[in-house]
Length: 416
Image (cartoon, rainbow, N blue to C red; front, side, top):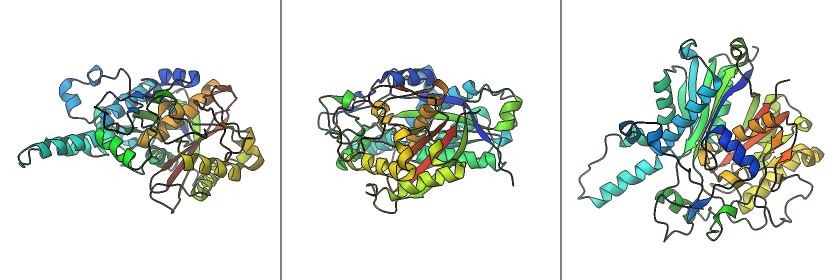
């Protein structure tokens, strides 16, 4: 069976550094940090008092009040980003076969704020179970793609992938396979997360996973820097319209890039810590290259998982050196989490979008906040430190890993 080609025809981004894909890109290349003191709740007794929240986002700019109340923030974010991607794709929704259009979405947690609030309300009451009738449909992780399909009438495959921070990369890989095997013409994919909550911050703090650089939030996310002390929690959504190549070509669509392949693996090592030798990361990148039919020396750019944790950053870079050998020093490596923070289940989609836009603009966004060299990191690697670098990016890889040892990787190529 001949596999069909899959291309990117629409992008949408709602991030801590920009509420559209164009705002997001402009902030990326200027090295803007999205970290700031938390405004959603009182952080006086919290170890970490900052995060990468969305700025100037008002749900009522996109939904009426009644509709907004029926959706957790993670689902609102999904709707806004997917709407932008669909508009950007210029799909004529009245002409396409909606039975062959799906929505495959990623979310690591889902409606955490909704769950938190309902439990707090119950605990503050007299023990009578007075729960909001929308509690369950607001909370469940699969409601985001459900809402997207309901709004637009998309009747193809519809579900959510949940693999912690690898969730939206998993969603992209599933979407790729659905289209290249001929099951769909178009899939709206991506991910969203809204975990900047009391429970989210408290839980990650209890794990000692978050940076506590409260005196300087904007510099707290510092992947590859020797003084990094944990990740910065972010929120938002990224959406990508994937389309079968001939379908896109027939309607004269703008094609951003081709999604050539992906890879999946497991560390099979620890609940939260990466394997110190990067065995699972080595496997997932090799799987991705093989699946895409790309040689290691063809890769120009890697957007790393790069969360700014002491163990994870070193393990990933060691794995890159192992997979790419001498060519590793020729790759523009970066971590856009230095600016967006870690968007958990939305990270894979947001970072894939950053990689695609790096191709379009021949410019690789920087890894900001790097000050102190880590002796455990190969100095010959080009980590695109502190300033965007011009580069004709023909092939780009995006890595995403999650608690539980989940590893996912996707690879894009610029069309000739």
